[in-house]
Amino acid sequence: MNALGKVKIGMTAERVVVVTPEMTVGHVVPGMPAVYGTPMMILHMEMASGSAIQPFLPGGYVSVGMMVNIRHLAATPIGRTVRAIARVVGVEAKSVLFDVEAWDGDRKIGDGTHRRGIVNVAEFERRFGVTNPKAAVT
Image (cartoon, rainbow, N blue to C red; front, side):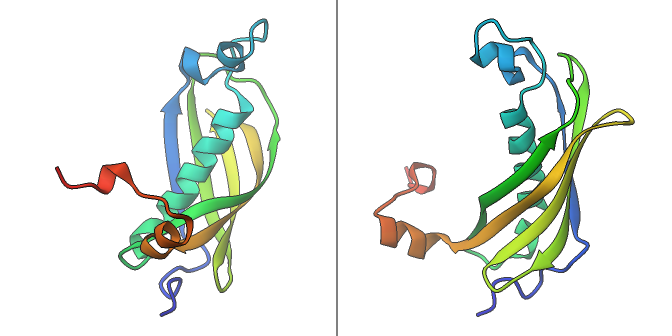
């Protein structure tokens, strides 16, 4: 089975968030400014990337982050709306490459590339002895 058979170059998705105090570098590192943290920007870029392709993966498959190459270009204060955008630019046998950007209004605050690997969840869990507590039936 080709798990990426329906994934095409050009597919896009975005993630829109309002910056909260918990998303700031100052929340995690005492003494640092209360501005949108790079790890949060990367997380939102990854989430947008996953959203772009998840509907097109077969049942039981997910995508997982495996590479990021990101520049954080500008600070964003609490209360501002950030839009993370992902666009598929490459599809290989077991992974998908994305161009990603983050915007604060009309100002680009980040960009780069992100690669996601495609995983059969059941095989992954068997291989690593991992169980998903959210999948348990109660």
